[in-house]
Image (tube, rainbow, N blue to C red; front, side, top):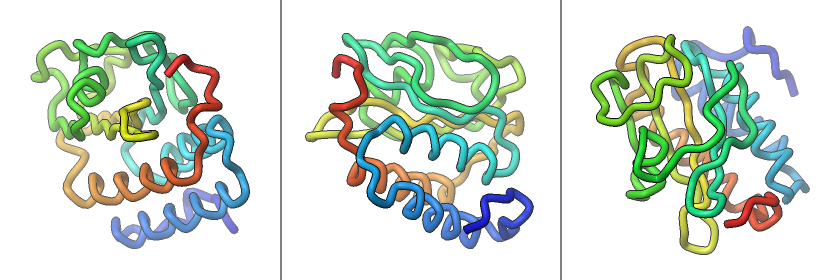
Length: 169
């Protein structure tokens, strides 16, 4: 299976179908979350155009703590009351933000980021973390991105034993 970013189709739906197939292959027989989260962050970072940060924050003692990611160094801790990630975790709702600078309480870890999508990650019926993807483009993420990323997160939720993160969920 090729993981060359030049091999990805230009059509967004076809691209996500390939990313989902690759994610399935990467997680085959692997239930520990860390390699799965790390591979997913890398896969999405390199497989999605116009993305400058992609990774995970995981619940740890009532706040989000930085997990596997690709991109520039990031904020280590995010309170549930702050930023796009904290809002997604606290409300258990996808946050698709066209302009992060207009989002109340936005945390600017990378000044190049202009739009963001955050998808809650669940285990045993509760939010245990979030998938966070930033873009330097305004209004980068649409309904196709949201639905496709929800499918990828669902794959993670069903393949990972999230109790093995080492974080205090």
